[in-house]
Length: 301
Image 1 (cartoon, rainbow, N blue to C red):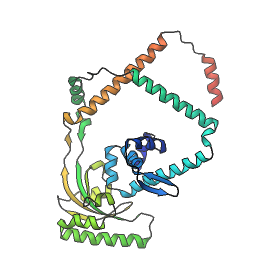
Image 2 (image 1 turned 30 degrees about the vertical axis):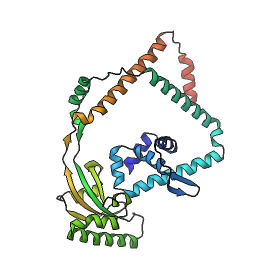
Image 3 (image 1 turned 90 degrees about the vertical axis):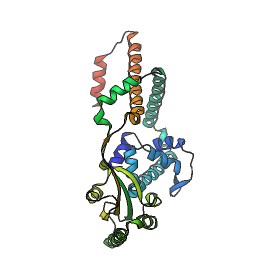
Image 4 (image 1 turned 180 degrees about the horizontal axis):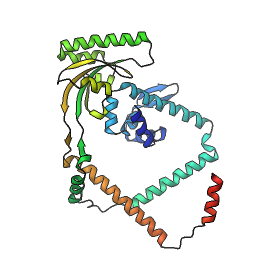
């Protein structure tokens, strides 16, 4: 969960980012509500789409974290509504921040239009060269194809609730181990992770680094088709079935070529933009009052 929140913070995720991204999604049905504040499916999709594929895969197997992210979005929207009702955006420091953001958006948009690389860049040879130099970076980690039956039992739940969840998960484990072919039906009927339950518990391939440590340890000795459980995590109990193992392998060039091409074009775009900025300053005499700058810096300390 911490890794997901760190990623959201890194990309500036919050109400503004999520709402802007949600415009790409047509759905507007409500998926969460708190009082007068609601989150639509489009907003939730925007939030999840802002995450890396690895963290989206992790969310597929972790309904508690998924729900917590949506709760966080609800809280942010509620706080934003209160701030706007008080006219908070009219405060001088907020207006200054808005103006800085406006200038940044205008500048970045302008520079982007001025720094488009040639249409034929990069060449296939350029892409091939990057691929060969960075083969280690294009290794896909070992991945586990898992299915689960999830019974919620947060760490702050009462002992009675936790014990009841454990017993239920243990009973489901026995049923699934006695008749592995029944796992899909058991998951559809009993799993409290709605997304995977609809798929018979299937959470898809999850890269080993993204698998929760407790689940990874429990699955270490399993063969394809085996069932283990109940596995305790911070959010509840899991009955785990290993469906398949995909060994670590080098991603084929055809698969990563679009990623390499995009990266090279972005790098070239930054170079063109910097050259443009340098050229603007080179066309005139630059004068900097170091004394005034030093004095101003001292006053801000």
